[in-house]
Image 1 (cartoon, rainbow, N blue to C red):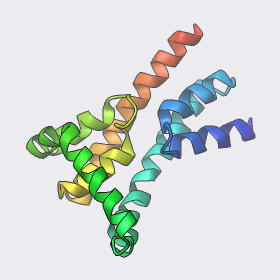
Image 2 (image 1 turned 45 degrees about the vertical axis):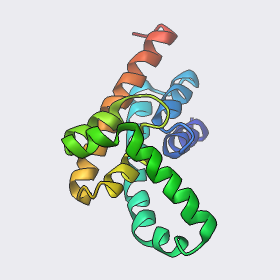
Image 3 (image 1 turned 90 degrees about the vertical axis):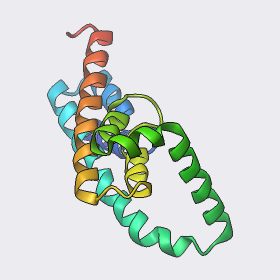
Length: 151
């Protein structure tokens, strides 16, 4: 149980799936369904302060390197083209809606970057990301329970 809880937590923090992978992993490894939801949401929310630290401090240092700067500009352009207009126009609500959609590329990593790029203050961005994460996680959790035949 401890090993599967840790793996669920780590998957939920991972940029390769976030809670969208952590929740199904935990449920299909027979962890308590409410425990899975709790640790997945907490792990996914924990990503936001880590990303803000990265964007505020580490990003500035790495921007001096040509390869990193080129990659950062490419990511910023993708973020602006994807849902950028809606996030910029609707602010908190646009960011929350973007994060709550349980599709690849729409989680807290992208939400943190979008909030940073569109200069949404950190507190507002955190709230939008956290609410979006909870809604997305509940959607994935419910869908996984239905798929497993537990609901």
